[in-house]
Image 1: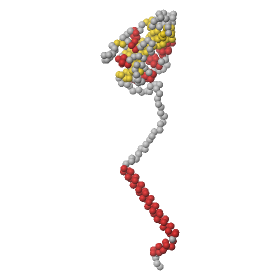
Image 2 (image 1 turned 90 degrees about the vertical axis):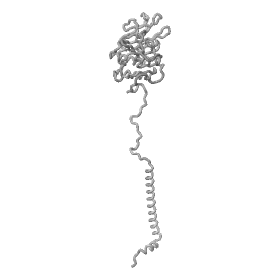
Image 3 (image 1 turned 120 degrees about the vertical axis):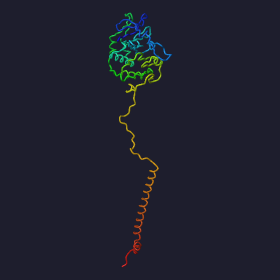
Image 4 (image 1 turned 60 degrees about the horizontal axis):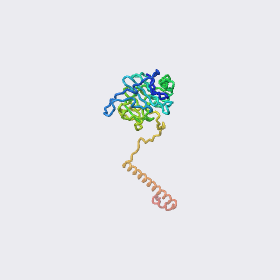
Length: 319
């Protein structure tokens, strides 16, 4: 896998040019010149497309592409530390490898993509490119440091092809969708397909991304906050996207329980209930009446003992 850097020097005589990792000036046809055929059923779709259709010199862009012979990771819009008459200079960098990536190359490529999406790779790349007025090109590149950046294994990656989501999706170039793409790249390998695998840009229309059948495409011209699956079926996510706040619940949450057997209110049950109440009331009345009668007789006996005795005479035997 080889590195290519495109930039320019301080003076007007210096023009944008590519330098290969052997420090020699070169051309990079796969980025600047080559056309790629689009196989689309849409009659309005373009027949051919170039890498330049997806990037602008001063606009950040990330492009991952594979054809029959080469694999390309292209990053543009990296602002330089110097200017020309007040005008900003922007670097571009490309990694070019054989179409069939070695396992370590594939992981290095994924790390570079992830770090670009997270926004920290651009500053590291800018630090290895310096203005050099004495150089005929006007700038120089420390390719040794660039190699160290390429092989940085700060975080580990999965290589599970079984978790690969083959559906093709596009969406708005916002942090949430970038984070979801980062999580996906950390878990599974890149597709083995040919064509445009990843395009992240600020000005590409959604229809062009669909025409080239990009695997993952992000553009500021696409509205919304979720992915649009335009081909294939979306694979269910097994993990929650990173950096997304979640509403938490207590581990033990009291639940409202109900009796296992809950009596049902029916007309028959209601009638039985009313009859029961009537019986209880009747019993209370009988007991109360009996008590009052007995109590009354005792009171009369105490008040009129003679009359009580005379009343009992007919029941005595004569001697």
